[in-house]
Amino acid sequence: MEDAAAALARKGPPAVEIADWIRRQISASRFVPGQRLVEVDIIRQTGGSRFKVREALQRLAAEGLIDIEEFRGATVRGASMDEVRQLYLARAAVEGICAADFTRRSSAAERRILADMTIEMEQCPQDHAPERFGRLNARWHAFIMDVSGNLVLADMVKRLNTPVHRLLFGTFYRGDRLNEAIADHRRILHAITAGDVDAADAAMRQHILNGYRFLTGLDHAIHEEDEVNPV
Amino acid sequence: MEDAAAALARKGPPAVEIADWIRRQISASRFVPGQRLVEVDIIRQTGGSRFKVREALQRLAAEGLIDIEEFRGATVRGASMDEVRQLYLARAAVEGICAADFTRRSSAAERRILADMTIEMEQCPQDHAPERFGRLNARWHAFIMDVSGNLVLADMVKRLNTPVHRLLFGTFYRGDRLNEAIADHRRILHAITAGDVDAADAAMRQHILNGYRFLTGLDHAIHEEDEVNPV
DNA sequence: GCACAGCGGATTGTCAACAATATTGTAGGC
DNA sequence: GCCTACAATATTGTTGACAATCCGCTGTGC
Image 1 (cartoon, chains in turn brown, purple, green, red):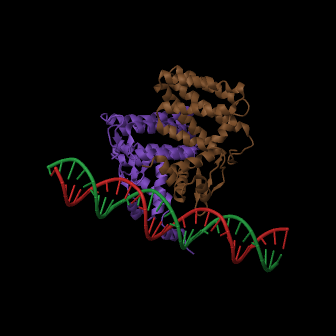
Image 2: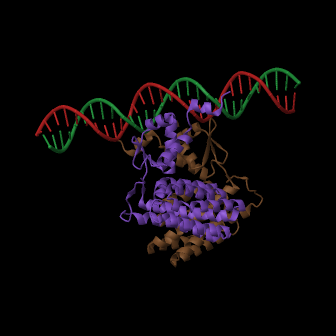
Image 3: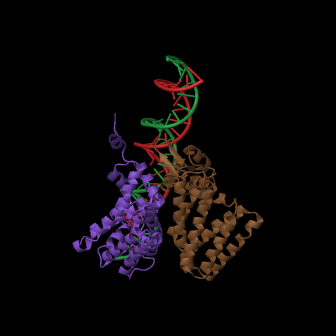
């Protein structure tokens, strides 16, 4: 009897995996806004059938990550500066709620894990390890999402993050961003530990908006409707 | 030379329109949770080709509105009571932000329009017109979304609403819901008119959460993980 | 009457060929 | 040299046929 792996090798990856693969390429800026996604190339690189590739593209279009034009195919969508603002505002609202829920629902053990992660991240500036900070930061936020128990919101944040993922990572390499983020995290953790639901919400919101402020403060020359290429 | 309508008649509706059509059926409960969406039926009813119907289904699956199982096709997803809670919490967060943005960005004329709509809705209880109230209510919320200028959030709310649309409408037929909603709207309008951004945010959040509380208060027998059929 | 294997219809998944369209390259005129 | 019209190529859209799978039905043996 064939096992699942053999079946997969015979049939090729399902549409969901192809979609994930493309999403990762976009997150990592291997696919950049404006770039055309040619079906044949994706077929070659993923081993999926043309049909499944097209299904994957449809899914990504539904998420707003790519545009599909008739007879012109799929292109990676870029976010205007105004849309980035909207994305951050949305994230602020949603992650605020999650922080509040985390405060309500987390066990002592889970709060302990969060505290440990927070402490570990505070080592990064003196180690000059912004990349590690970025990875830990993603895990830190994801952990709060998970424990908050709201899959709808978690999914939403994941979706909101993809287009700005690279932008987000970029900020960690510059200036005082790391220390500011660490201070924010500490404030959030404090509110959570104290069981102060509203304070956790407010601190998380502020944290996200700080990230946005830092991002826009960097390139003050960018105008409202400029396309942002997350390089 | 052919115009667009003729071309459409010849080629059939695009995938996006088919997806919209299915979405409307679900919103109106003509398709109910658990129901199988057979490709051939949709082809017959929309006139789309099989391929386009399948693309449309992929999009809806990406939105989480339907499930697609291998060789079993698409079924309408039902929301568990817990998921409904999550949806409402998300809506509260997002619409709160939009109310705040409306307060910041709206012109005097736009605030006037909102006030007129609010007054019109206050007639509904004495006219015994809950259906009309529901329609106006949808417009009222949509108007705030629009003017707030955040397309990302507007899209998100639209997506959040589809699975619970019928539930929402149902509440307007019962008890004191209309008067409560009217009082909420009045409070929100008051905060907006006063230019109080935070108060508008808080009042809108409270309004959505009141809706949720009303919904859950109705059927206290429903347990956490029960499927909710929005009939 | 009931359990179960097998069969047939219904439905979805896959593929390959072909049609429609956009893009690119090229030649010619000005 | 540059612009335009046209041909060649690349890419996507569409269709139909066929394979794989599931589901309900039926008939058989007990």
